[in-house]
Amino acid sequence: MEKILITGSNGLLGQALIKQFKDGYYLIGCDISDEDFNKNVPLNEFYNIDLTKRDKVQRFFAAHKPDIIVNTAALTNVDQCEDDRDLCWALNVRIVELILEAVESYSPLFVQVSTDYVFDGKTGYYQESDKTNPVSYYGHTKLAAEKIILASGLEYIIARTMILYGHGYKVRNNFVTWVIDQLKAGKKIKVIDGQRGNPTLVDDLAEAIFRLISKKEYGVFHISGSEDCTRLEFARRIAKNFELNLDLIQEIDIKDLVQKAPRPSNSTFNLDKLNNTLDWLPGNLDASLLKLKSRMAEGNDIE
Image (cartoon, rainbow, N blue to C red; front, side, top):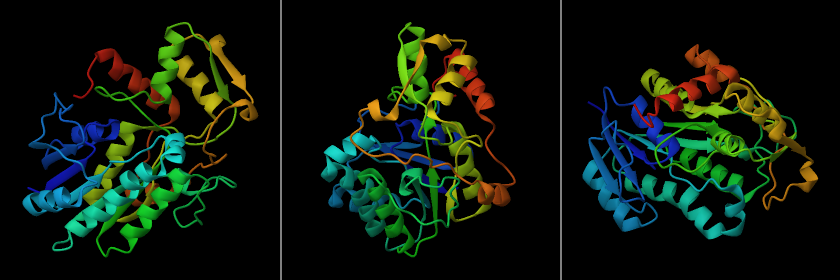
């Protein structure tokens, strides 16, 4: 049985990956937290580890030697990355460097979760081979990690994704859960009619990674929801599918939105490579939101 390590196993994607890989793999999770959040799908092993510490990383990988590493550990708060560049580099780049250094003696498959923010957003519908040009420090660090992996000589999957949403145990709010919480509380929200992208249900990203690993299809892949929209359109679709008050959603001009880090205005993905490789794509936005609604109604954070 292959041994798979999921870093950041307590996060939204980490929990979804554990659910996806629960059958047929020996599952190891690690996280900066002392507590294992995956209660309903027990891991074979869980470890609390700071992956920015070389000695700890070296000892951990020497002891466990996973066949597959899925690295979800990252700092993804784009504005925080602008403010605390040292922390951003440590979590988004240094961790990758240290893991790759620790596995030099053998050759695991390395799966890295990356982002649409490696692009500048001037054109949209990006293919995997299109020129990268990040406009934020967050995007810069994620691209730096990609380049380190490409130069490592390991077999790899770089899974670029965007606007990740879903439901998990003790995970921080994402755009969908924030909209739901605010509208349920009767609060007005201000959303821009811009920043076009492909909202991605976390279960779909986890399934795509599972399918690529199962088929031994390696390389760079764009993985996202199959439908694109602006943030305002997205908020309205959330309200519609969750039967919430659309009138509480107010449009705001992007010039009036306070954001420290610049964002790509149109970072939509071309999904042809994923579709041609797997003969599969995530569902449309309404179907994905209804899937999430059903799961949240069941009250199961992880099944």
